[in-house]
Length: 405
Image (cartoon, rainbow, N blue to C red; front, side):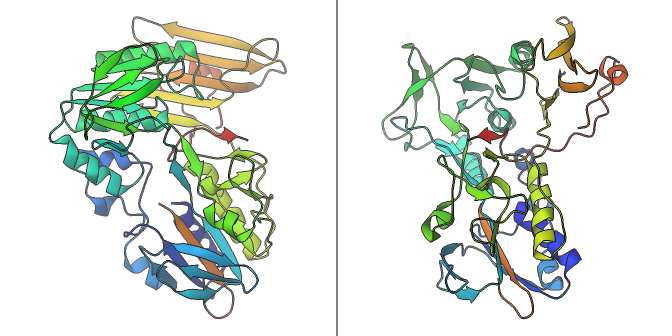
């Protein structure tokens, strides 16, 4: 998605340069934010971000199922997996992130899946036809959406396993998590908190999960959604600066330690932070396009607002939901009968600084100039009204909250 947005941005500013995109997946860019809708019989055509002819109409050369495998910085060229070697003037790395897979014994068993790509979803859909009990490891944004996917597939006995003491631990506080958990329980989704999975049971295929507290549950299908790690292998191999825990180090203009190479999205490390939402990635794409076109625009961080609509339950979080006195004053509205929780944090200067609200593949692109190669928070009035806050919250991207390094 971030690579596609960059192509849109750079093409609006520069009508001449030839853009070349190398993608790891065999299909063109699609909407990862709404992956779950694919299980609701939404056709793949409706998830694509553009029509197939859009690339040729915009002078964009697209290489699918052919990711870049090496960068030759000395000669400013890249080598693809299929052996293509092409020169670049600017190289943009938008390789995204990969799923973090905990080192749990049995993770390679049949019936254990990740939740990242259309191919993953196709495998899950096929396998779920013979499953009656499902589980998801990870109670964050993507984990809860994966759990919804299991329910959509007809697996009525579905469980979310979360190591932290609350759901969405990076976005909402304990009270909001309890409200959300009660809602999900009523919808038939079991939540197991403070659970550490020690083993995936079964002989060849999964039959259950074992936990550190000596308890077990029966499971026929498992989805792992335990976080992300930046796809920075290309950068490491060619000697670009990376963070101690991964991520390609960039400055405010999206440049890496090599001025001719830029990085955007979940592979980029900006001021020690990996941004795992789509809105910051889109802003990075805009800044990268401006940098290449010699326009002045800087990336100075981004609001990490989050919203989620899960099985009829609305959740929103923006700002710092964990700030407390004496740094802020908190106004709470909680209705346990209706399952409503609202929290508004007011800074000591009187500004609204944070709120939470609850209610019922990898791509590399590069371009060569000349020839060719490569929340605002709601007002207190709307917050405490019966209506949903009117804040313009950005959509959630593939995973989640920022990872601070």
